[in-house]
Length: 231
Image 1 (cartoon, rainbow, N blue to C red):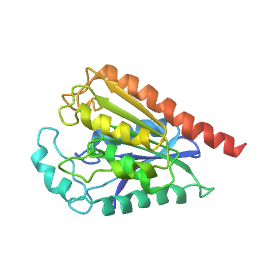
Image 2: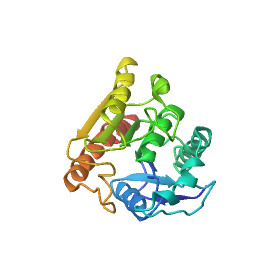
Image 3: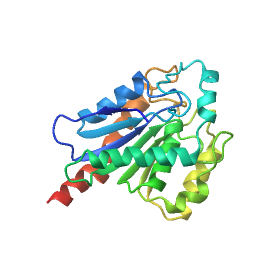
Image 4: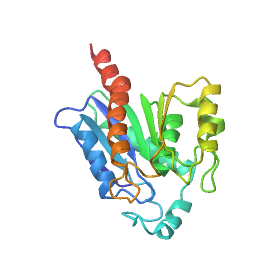
């Protein structure tokens, strides 16, 4: 499995797995991964379509081209990819125990949630993660949320036609019933994909505000925790 890796300017204190949208590890995902590295994270974006199309980068206006790769995904395969990315981050750390989080966008939002079920993360962030609740593309993760290992931050767009209020409520309801720590954020005027400045649905205000909260969430659960551990 290939991956895009962005290194911080100094020795990494914390790691981050960045999960792609349905359009591959494209220029946008590489840019986001680099932005996280500039904030001090050793960041890796694994290529989740490596089994069906290594190097695939889709066009945001041509979802049909994405479908063969989308359908080629399985949770067993994704869990193997998650473990590989997590293990790589640990091996890249001098301490061999790099405190790590995950963030994902679109289908990567579900992958980030799945990562929180698969490996010991400090925190998880999901942007409009379709398929956490039942969907036509992926098995539901609702029954598994009781096993989530980390706090999770969820972002949704109020105008998202792919993920409706009932699906969002199903996710938060399952987390609440399981007593899991979560933060749920809806930008009422934003659509699916609002964080991506390469998409027509880009929403500058939601992207800016969510970026600030994302960094604060990561700092609370990763950076600050890493400093305490080193003290």
